[in-house]
Image (cartoon, rainbow, N blue to C red; front, top):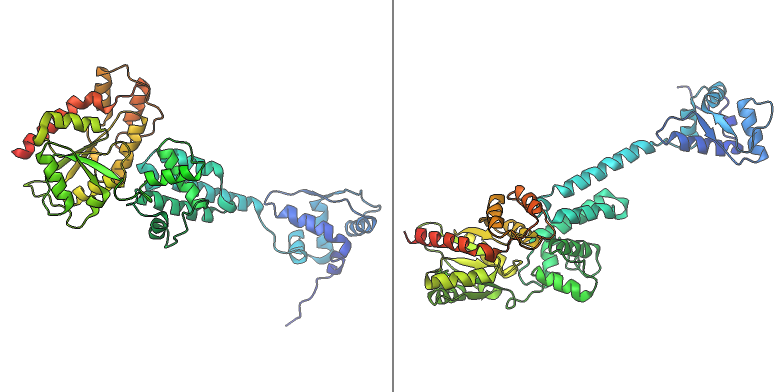
Length: 420
């Protein structure tokens, strides 16, 4: 084999005085954009002399010369038979393509934000779209799409697991975030991200103090004790010998509401729903609607659950328990911005389906009470995209109490159907 060595004239290219030339050419060619000229300098006299020798100039170039790439190509080819690209690759290193790299990074960012906006958790609770937009505005963590996606994946896993069941924050974190009990510690990037999402859901300002952060976690069932988290129910007579079943039956027989604690909902023994067909359990947002139902039906009140606003861990756990035992869940809430967000949250966290919560139901309700207050911040209703568009057009909220008579008539029909 013929040994390979430096091409003829290559030693001239390796003169130390030409190093600034090759570094500049390498940088420009690595831009990924067309290059016709390169500007150098400032050059000292030895560097100017070396450049004049390379290009065959009859006088020294300027201190900051502009060199045509075509002229440089001729000189390099004449000296060593290589192209400028080949020469700078040998002298400096492999050429890059920064334009292509920027395009690749742009594609990765676009894919990341499209993934976040289309994630099941965000789509199920459209109020989180504002949170997703704020994440995009904040930019990438450390400039890295992969690192950002990993953080957002953990945040979405936490949001999907809420409300928690009266777990201390470290216990909840260890269960949800890859066994890391410190993942949601105060001040961590993940904790801040999740708390911003919860604040967006509840339409409150992001928490600024430790007390505010604890309150927001407690609202999501984290570190919430098993006695303070309660859910109201009426007309429910489950079978079973546990405390939940006994309390619910006693209160139903007395025509009273039962306030069930999370401890009772989670107690062994549970309940059974022994009916000839799947029982329908209606759920409402406001206690006053349950009070009206008990006043009208007394001990004959059909099965009814009240979330008392945002569903806490007891309400969500109880509704899931009922569904697990065959109940068909129907939910109604206020026709305002928060009511829509509450409904979206509950429908995402439980198998409940909307009850008189369509755009047609809203139009009928607002026709009866056209002078309500403004609906506040509106977000999409996943079960009926037309609903919030219609609410925005009317600009009027309709609280649940104003349609209570219609809801009670539905309960009466359900009671008759259950007795048939």
